[in-house]
Length: 507
Image (tube, rainbow, N blue to C red; front, side, top):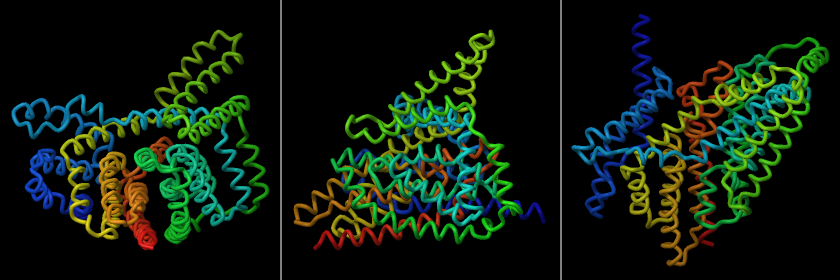
């Protein structure tokens, strides 16, 4: 009987994975033949497209079933694509999916540099125990009221994500959330996931909150204030509804928190246990982090990628820590060996290399998908199929962007959609119709779609990596079953906002 249950469980997971990929790719090849016939384009190869669709189905299936670690899955698939490119691809050019140059070109170096640098900064900061100290302060503020704590955490994360990139916010807030969950003796996964949702949700509200918004700003020349004025209010309304929905879903589990007989005595003991350590290092870390955040805000003035101040901050903080330790132990012959050990730990153990390598290989695979012309085909199909009706076109951009962003990285899809949206806006402008709201439609879809799956956003994977550092596992299916429907709710609410924008465009 147990074998039968296990067999059915595996089959069910495969069916779910198949439905996931079908939902994303339905209609692509039906329109692919017509697209090639109509335009005679050689950019899209049916053979390559079908093969890469099967490859992505395999990736999502293996990641979802977790028979193999997700980093090993994307590592093997990326390596296989490279190998096939130079073997079978030598005889069949349609199988040349990914050359070595294309693989390296597909890696988003800015994302990798930002992740590694922020991991280093946050880890040095964590050595001061400031995250545990903040957890105690929140514990004191909430007076052991889990409702107050839940909503406080949700909206603190949301506001931070509006004015920082969501990856940085996750690095700062998740360690505190894990510490809080340990104090309350609740499942850390249930407490961290709302922070992920809040981060991605409010990351859509501002220019600097999420990479797709930065790309839209750069391409369309939009202002910082225009993002807030057009996206801010809908995001605030959505976040209130989503926060309440998440609390209702999690109310049963959150109600089973640890019972405390004497709150004041417990608080006193916690304050005694979780004291700030290495105050000079803490002050230095906070100053460096503040400077990094300031330059995040100034990236529009300097045209500086977010990774640059993060890398500079990490390098500066490492030097400061080195200096502080050498000064403390300068009389000790072990100071040099101690520093070499600390540096080695920071670069090898403290950086979540499993997460970093997952991103690197996933970028390669998505680069192969992009090389086949699949994403271009989808973008062109939106324009050809829905271009005659502005409202239907806007909703198509919203929903297709959300679905693709849930299963692939939203950066390449946004990149191929930018000229399409610009072309559509120009087409409607010639007819005397205001269609600039299509930029906000694309932002909604690309950013909100990241909440759909564990691999839908950089912030999601970073949070999963931080949980794994604490020996806590967050699975693809556990995330998907609860939060993919919630992502659909977010996109449905965004559809209402898009409809209102459409009505205003006609007035």
